[in-house]
Image (tube, rainbow, N blue to C red):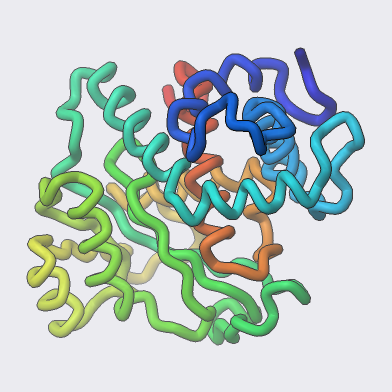
Length: 264
């Protein structure tokens, strides 16, 4: 069954997510709507970026979908699914299941009235909002997400990101490639404390405009993949855990659609 505004292959993808989403038995007496229907509704919100209240009437009620989504996000359901799908994708490409190298970067999402209470001002990009810090493997698969007010420095999040990555990969990561915003002895020391060597990939001197830099372009491509979900185009949510959850939901959907030109 195809839902309005949601990809035609979405129902096939839900079967891969269902084992991770059953926080209670599927036939639990208090369950009024099928998990599959709630997941399809959540996917519609993620793809369109529409407010919860604008959910079409052929989905379960918006309040039900929103409450269940927050339970899934808090329990890390989509995070677990994305990590397992990532391992399968890597093995499919004759790679080790867990990476030894990662790429780290950040972007600033414009704030909205819902997120304004935790927004900061990014002086470099002249934007008020929330900064999303991403760690991906060398194929661009999502490993860890952190959110901070936009005025927070990128280098201050390196240790926490590396620790999350090590937890997700079984302490397998050895190297992290970063841009010049992560320079500094203290930053390198904090990464080392997490068992990761920080490698700064610098732009060539006296250059202007766009330059495709080794390794660093991978995480930029991941940001582009995630931007296909309009819920991640701005910071639309009141809770940071919801913003992180939508990132892992999007990563899981992209991996479910694999093989896909995006991952070629």
